[in-house]
Each structure stands twice: as structure tokens, then as C-alpha cells.
Length: 200
Image (cartoon, rainbow, N blue to C red; front, side, top):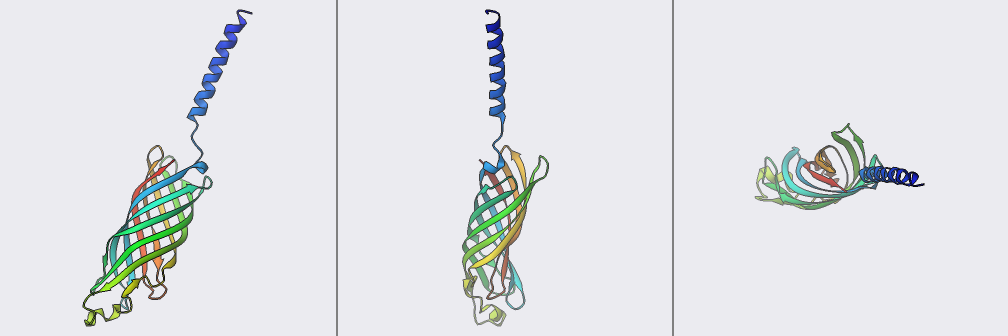
């Protein structure tokens, strides 16, 4: 009896230790994780005016999302303009005051490096188009754009990206896609972002 008890205790302690180590070492399944991200975003405005001019603005984007399964995620994004876009060949400037997006997407792991992903959804944009020297001939094509920009504030949007794991649950993000299209003027804007995302 005395010989059995120490063996039993030793075996039990080893088994308990291994079980505890395995339970502690288990990573939370991705489907149970949420994430936040902060991105620097360049916005390229295209097809402005009759001669299809373009210009670049800047924004900051906050991302809040969650994994619905190992391959599917959903997120919302809130962005604010930092610098207006000055449109070429004229005196038009486009300001994106803020935007909000909702996306559903798919992501696929690429080994230990990170993931590639694509997502689609809808974006609400609020901004303003300001035209200086309105009577100049060079600005005639932009007169219809002046005022609220874009005229249609909701639009379909999409993006595709790559994230690289820097450390546990922390990713470096690179992505690009379409932010919105103004159905009234046919102007559209594309988003190109990079930043950090943290999963928890």
C-alpha cells in the first residue's frame, strides 16, 4: 500500500502537469477572436470632371472586427480625412470629412507568414468639393462637382490585402481597393492602406 501510493501520486502529478501545460499552451481558435487595427490610408480620386482628372488625399482608418469562422470575418471601419485631394488641371479640392464601412470577407493563411484576404461591403462617405476661381475656363468641367462630395453618399466597396505576422497576434497590413463611386458624377475613389492589426 505504501509503495503504491507514491507511484500513484507521482503518476497523477505528471499527468496533471502535462494536461495543464497542454491546456495553457492551446491557442484560442481564430473563430473566437476579435481584432482592432489602425491604418494610414491614401485615397485616390479618379474620373473627376469631363477630362477624367485625379488627385490624392489622406485619411486615418480605425478597423474593428471579428472572425466568424477560421476563414470568414466581418468588420466595420471608421475613417477621417487628414489631407484634401488637389485635383489636377484646375482649382478643385476634394475633402473626405469621414467615412464608415461595413465588410464581410474571406481570409486564407499563407503558411506561417500571415494571410491573404478579400472583402466586400458598403461605405457611407461625407465630404465636400471646393472650387476656387469658379469662373475660369479651366474650372468649367468641375462646376457640377462643387458642394457635397460625393453626391450619392452610399456606395458598394471592396478591398484585397495581405497581412504579415510580426509577433503573436500582431500583424502588419497592406491592402487596396475601391472605397466608393459617385453615381451622380461618375467620380470614384480608391483606398490604399497600411498599418497594424491586433487580434485578441
